[in-house]
Image (cartoon, rainbow, N blue to C red; front, side, top):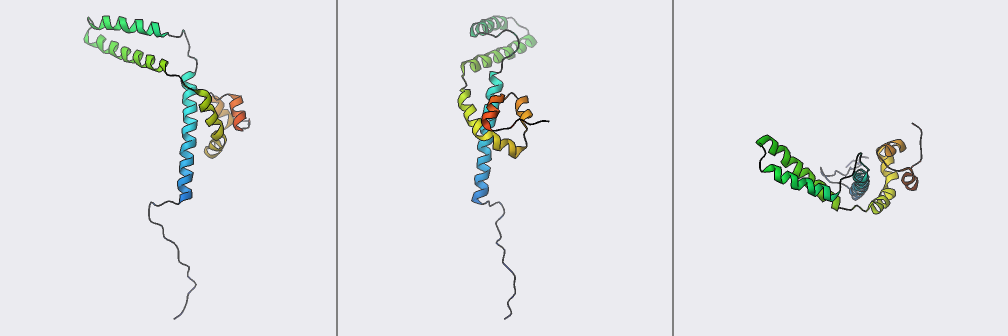
Length: 145
């Protein structure tokens, strides 16, 4: 019987992944979550233009809407109901406090590697509101362009 120098290849089943690949995907998801949570917290705490609404002013407006709903036309009622829901959502959101320092710590841990993998520049981070000292702590160098 003649022997040939043919090496057998291991055939993986379709859809099966190595443990290393699974770990890399999990790491990427965790990094993405940390970056997303921090950026969303920055967005939600960003100062808005104009006078800030207080809880009392929102409550007062909700009371006024309740009174107007009783006599409003069908179309006006639609707009009032939407405004009422928006105000209730704003009220609920104002009660939530975001621990931005904890989110910032997680962001600092993962931002450099995440940014390098995704090709995100210093200026892109700055454009979405990440402060320069945070980027410095994360080890993301200031670049030109």
